[in-house]
Length: 401
Image 1 (cartoon, rainbow, N blue to C red):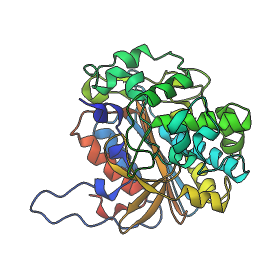
Image 2: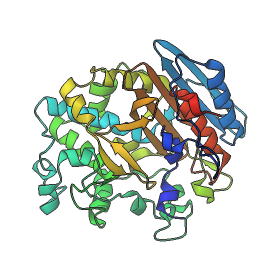
Image 3: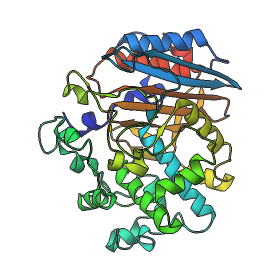
């Protein structure tokens, strides 16, 4: 098993037409997804139930369409007790955090304290010295074209398969570890570059967003998590979104089961976990309701202004940690579903938890979905069930079977 398999489970969670269930060889291809007007509560619930029946312990979602809202859940939050999942549960949302961090940086760009195309060494000369500090720009960190390597394989060597057989050893050892952000950044900077600075396609790296957190602290004078809370989370009116103070989530939530591609069998709960390993890159806890509200207000110009939002939506090709090529802006993922529309949002995964949140470009349709099992063994019936759910959730159910 390799890094691609061990670290990512959301490739099948992208709302992409390319991941629609494929026709068998020699049969006509499935029709392209088509927009489905309005909500279909029965269809949405059936898709959630189908995902649970396929092997997902629990899944929950909120879908909005032209002012109407549907919330649903299927399965269990705790395999031992049978406690059911609910649509309002808190959840670790992983790299969706990057959109919040990016919005905070762009606020500082609007205020003139940060320049997008300035070298990061202008702000953090001690942290990123030398040639890299002179050539890597703030924009390159935001859109993953810096060429700075990912630190996670070095912080969690047993999950990558690069240095030792894949196992949960480092995952278990670091459950309560308090990582120093500077130490994690140093791991990424010391590793061989993933690409040349500024080259396309970019290479996704969490090191970029830890550096952006340090940049925010440098220019604002307060910890990045504090700035993001005051100026992004509170400005968006989010009531259930926060950076947890410790390893436990305070409030109702599901257990979060990690399979590590089959290396952990049966999957184990990692809902209690210190998130110091990726604070401004993946540290947030939220609800599906809050995520839909956040993206509606961000894309509606209520978190940053039109010029900054336009910069955020300037995309480049980026190779994700699963090896797929995505269209990535400044902390914002763009997804084109042929025949159905353009969607903006992000997706995230941490140990045991996966989330996706997508908003159609016209703002009329939104969907946020959470699952509580990650990196299940493939091939799996979960993948097809997840594809059907995500297409129905974003209102593109023309190809759903």
